[in-house]
Image 1 (cartoon, rainbow, N blue to C red):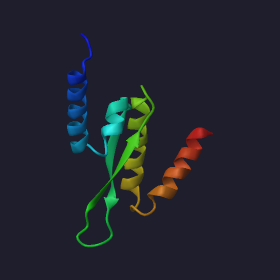
Image 2 (image 1 turned 180 degrees about the vertical axis):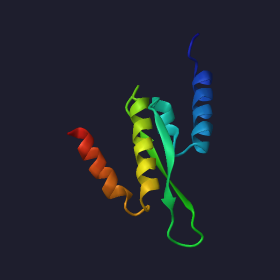
Image 3 (image 1 turned 90 degrees about the horizontal axis):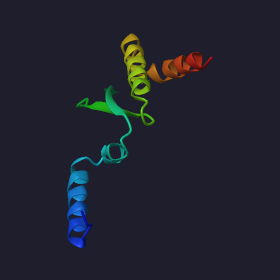
Length: 97
């Protein structure tokens, strides 16, 4: 199949339209990296709105992303949202040793 200017323009139009609906995730979708989002807590002001955190891994490392999300959920459920960062850093250091 020969790439013509018309086909190229059609591809650009499609990608432009697609990326408009997925501004936050388009770069990850385009590269094929494994990623997920997880509830990271709620805003401190009223009304309290959910805050999400996106975890992105290296190619073919889906298991690492899932383990990280699982570890974060365990820590989040065991503590208040404000202590999670400290505990997560501690857990990551102990896993490296």
